[in-house]
Amino acid sequence: MNDIVNRVANSQLMTLDLEDYYPEGQRRVLDIKDWLFEGLVLREKDFRAQVSNYDWYQFKDAYVALTCSSDAIIPGWAYMLLDIQLEPFAKQVVIGDLEDLETAIYREVISNLEVSQFKDKPVIIKGCSNKPVPKNAYIMAIHKLKPVAKSIMYGEACSSVPLFKKKSS
Image 1: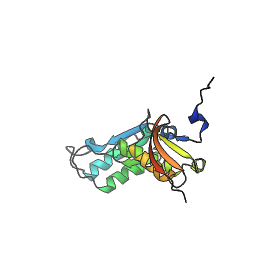
Image 2 (image 1 turned 45 degrees about the horizontal axis):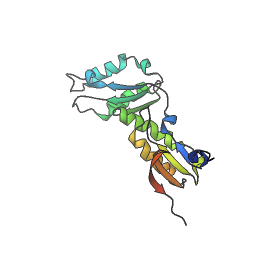
Image 3 (image 1 turned 90 degrees about the vertical axis):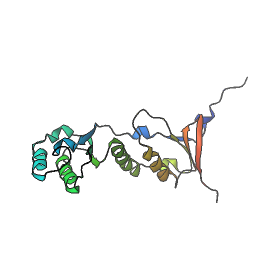
Image 4 (image 1 turned 45 degrees about the vertical axis):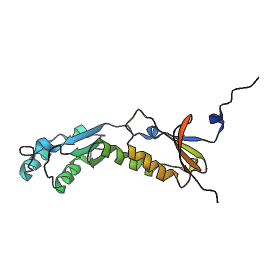
């Protein structure tokens, strides 16, 4: 009688699931449009008053994206002033939307990722996730794995797309 053999479980194939590295913490967007005169003009004195009177503690341990949803031209110092206020509370602050925020978070995660366990092994970067893993994180993962992995695929073990294979010397 033929036994059923799980060839995937018996292979050297390793999976990198970026969702496993998703840092916990609330993601927040701070839209400063309402802090502007008629939603379009930043008046320094009024803006500084808004900053001074705002409850920054609500961003404790959160990841924050700073944005302005109107077509106003926001000077760089305004975002810097907001960052100074957020720094004691927020885990990370970026200018942009939630996708920009997740990309910045994953840039740090992947730059600190220990990849020695993937040395000379075939690796699958898992494609599906329930958490908002940004598309850029997959590109960053390729760059991190390529120098060490024997091969890199994308997807699941049962249906993967080959992306890279180290050339034999």
